[in-house]
Image (cartoon, rainbow, N blue to C red; front, side, top):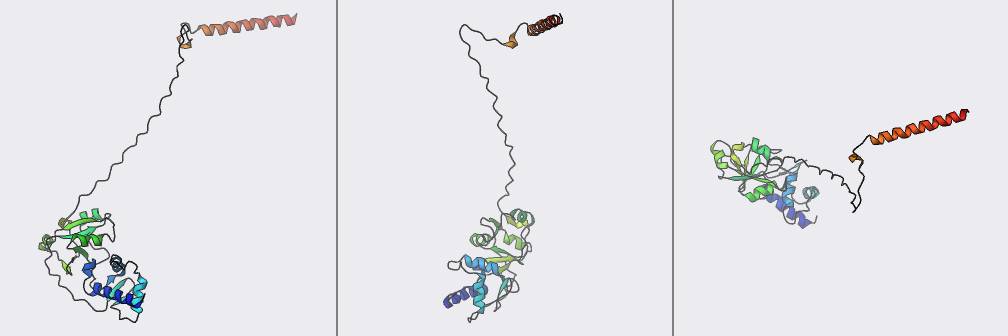
Length: 246
């Protein structure tokens, strides 16, 4: 990258880490670190920074410019520590959280729990909540958090700037969202029956009739004819045999 590009990258990272991570839907851990992948997600959402990769961060940290951060294996940490904000704060009446569709049923059953981070970020606006949620799911499900009610019952909310509040866990009684869709029941696909063979009838002609063996009034007549023919053949064979012996 050119010098002026590195300078601009330095400014935006410094602004995120030291001043307003909440504007980008980010928060730092208790030790001041931030996962590099989450910083990348936020930068790629900003116009003009979609091309930034880890190599650019390394280039900035190794440049002659005074870098505002240090790079670790998976985290980035500002050199200047941020001021610790008191956690004894009354949150707004409602906060918002955008859940992945895959884990939404689990959240409704067990509540909000942190994943790889120590806190769960709750947004003061639906826009910020959806911005955070779309980083993991293109169509997240928006949850409304009854934060004031949860605070009254002893749950602690830590402010992070003006747009985020952090909680460690939150029971499902303080969450509301769209109802779960019941899985569609499998429908049996009925196979169409094979059509019955069409009987092609022989058209009758005027002055004629058709012989139907099934309508014979004397069905034994054919058997008797066969027996008569067989007896005649037997007698003929006997006569030929007598003649040959003379």
